[in-house]
Image 1 (cartoon, rainbow, N blue to C red):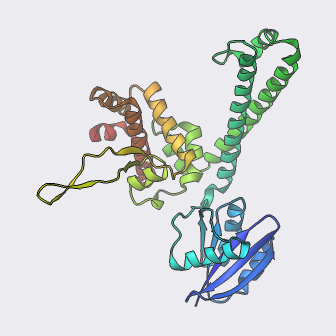
Image 2 (image 1 turned 90 degrees about the horizontal axis):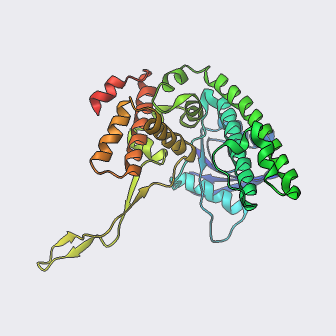
Image 3 (image 1 turned 60 degrees about the vertical axis):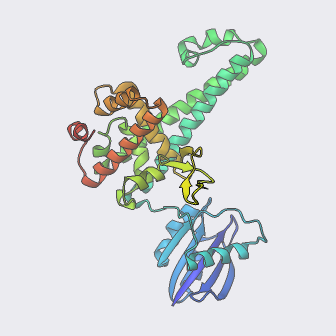
Amino acid sequence: MDRYIGLDAHSSSCTMAIVGHNGKRLQSQVIETNAQALINFLLTIPGNRHLCIEEGTHANWLYEVLSPHVGEIVVARVRESRGPKSDQIDAFDLAEKLRIGAIKTRIYKKRATFGRLAELSRAYTVLVNDTVRVKNRLKCLYRSRGVSVGGTGVYAPATREEWVRELPVKVRFRAELLYQQCDGLSKLRQVAEKEMLGEARKHAIYHILKTCPGMGRIRTAQMLPIVVTPYRFTNKRSFWAYSGLAVVMRSSSDWVRTQYGDWVRAPVQQTRGLNRTCNRTLKAIFKGAATTVIGCAKAEPLYNHYMQLLESGTKPNLAKLTIARQIASIILSMWRSREVYDPRKLKRNT
């Protein structure tokens, strides 16, 4: 006897709706957003429990807390509805979609042994973004006062006083505060990086994957809690799609009728681009790795392949995309075989 449960979560209350195997609405209940209260209610539901949660602020916590008490748990990405809306309607809608298999996008939430690494990686990423934001504000401040700035010299402690003198007196204090904020964030970023790399070194696969060209220590540490396991993906093409590296072709009015009455494909213009439904962090990791290979690893077979693509007339952005996809394929292969990077194998293939 299967029971399909939809959970609509908010900061103070959660609404649970239960649907039977035949689609009959059995019950709905408002529960406090409390782990033990939610577990106690789940345990009162008989049969095989299938739970569906909407992706949001509470999704990670709910997945960790409730997954041991249900036979199946699904985190769904749901588009905003245009019709009537309430917590009960949303909960029943999640339960019904889970019952009939109508959930199009499922969010992978398993972290296995990478749970702590995922939190450390997220903290490091936030600090890096905040540091970049403060540095951009500093340059914006100088440029707004007609001071031309470029490069990283404006951030150097040895030359800060000279740069501040270029500003009017009334805005110098603001610049000094931004410098102090930048220094504080830089120190915190170093601490977060040290903790993240220390946690990553505890995993044997980390030492294997970081040998891949362009990946390095930080990108590998950030990638591990995102991918978790290579066996999630049936092949490299599904991995490309998850990483935002899959090429999408779009066209319309593809067929025209000839004078003989036959249908033939029309020479229409096709729009080409990358898939947008992807993991943005993973996409940035592989594109950054491709940039590193192109700029700093000229002895690698991947760089030679990049130059061959350019010589054959491929546009630089598409050639870079090809290198990023190759790096993703190499990572997937290394992870499955648990072998360190061997450029001789890649040279034979390319």
